[in-house]
Length: 212
Ligand code: URA
Ligand code: SF4
Image (cartoon, rainbow, N blue to C red; front, side):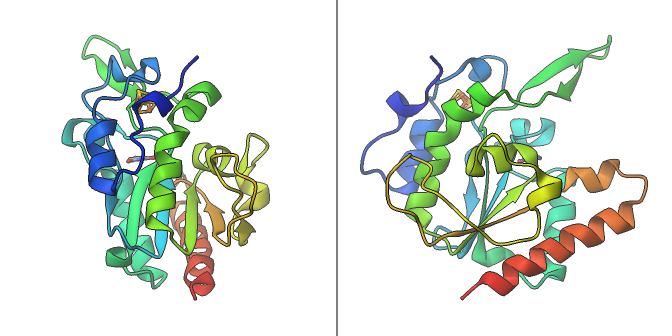
């Protein structure tokens, strides 16, 4: 089955992990995408933000959240009082999944499957283990399912601190708090952008409040 684990080196630091992820063939998504988009940011961050998967811009540039959704997120973090330099940002799935549409061959984002999310989770688990943040933020449904399980629902669980169980299925609970919110791209798609954006900032204030 799909699984990134054969590609994840033991006892690697974050830099070595990133290098290894560049060669991951743990699921078929590497075939059509340009490159692996690994996490980026402060390796001793107190806040780790988890998105869904790289978008079109991120796939070309090789960095997470450098497109339109990233601009929304940066503004919301600052407004909520979270220092972007005290954060690390990554995705539940590290390759861009898309369908080509129309004669211009525009690449339209496609949600990753639970299998692809499960395959890619070992990279996320290692990032979280090495960074050991205080709070993990799930940005949207895919990140929420990857971090909290397939029954996760954003509308039900957003904006409250939840305990984060170990991603690698290990026994002991972690003392890491998870706060879920909407995906920042939902702000861009919404008719009532201001209200949706305010909800994002409000959830991120819960993150700021959960920092020790
Ligand atoms: N959306 C995501 O979920 N992740 C990115 O890196 C960019 C857009
Ligand atoms: Fe590996 Fe994840 Fe890319 Fe699949 S999406 S090939 S598991 S890095």
